[in-house]
Length: 422
Image (tube, rainbow, N blue to C red):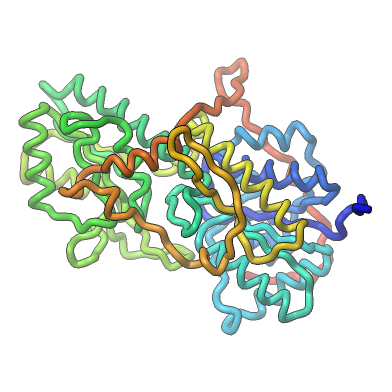
């Protein structure tokens, strides 16, 4: 007879890195799936730092309605962080601290919701648990607007930023076209993407054909050629009357240097970029003399829940639910990934993949997705991208005309360990 007893222990969930418009949908998937199995869920405040500091949140104090509202609320409900755990050999004390906290609170399942670095962290913790004789099951949960995780067909968070980028490109271009006769000739939109041009590519969905915006897309995968860029802009303005350019923040020159290198680095060791759009705009002004405008959506592109993709929101919830199912089934060091089973109509499923095949790996745009001149996307790219922005995921609005987003109580769990400094 199948056992109906409650699984022993608690589940700890944490969010990592840059948040997305739908990461809280994943949190809802985790919490609702765990509650359905009678498992209590703690959340680490501000990602892995919360686990190290024993700064834990009891999600059991939240109402069913509040957890459900996470599905349409942007940001990170429990706080996130950019904090990379280094190697087990050099920073073993941090990993041992995590096991200490897990023991103190009977945490038997750890779900880390993030990108490449987070997958690496979950993998290392799973390895240390075995070495220290502590039964902890670690599941990486995919999230990143950059869409650069290996194995998975796409990353939760990307579909919504892709939709925002395509819509913004279309709307801004209509504005530029209206004013081009006596005002702005060139509009430059800078989007996220340090090493992979997936977000920039999504702008290509705004139009199709030589005269449709965006007229140029600049990818990190292709070295920036100033002469070719200026020639294309000039030819477009002369033919169409105006020109829309979408550039990835990670655009590099032929020497491999970022065009917008700021000279600083973030907590993960990644270069801090200072803005490629103004660099390109200055070139356009100096070399071609055209009036320009540029825009940097920055956080807006990854927090625009009002313009989220229905596909993305559904996938974000599904990976959270699957992560719990995998954990309670005894799986360890895996990640629920999205597998595309059909393009048109678009169909997908969730399957487990080993973290060892995902951690510290990066999926860039394939060459077959870029046009021969390197300034646009191919039909193959459109087939891949188009389904990911399909459908709307509307948010409820209040009488004041603003969205009704939820703010959780985030009740702290009493501490049981000594203070640990990070």
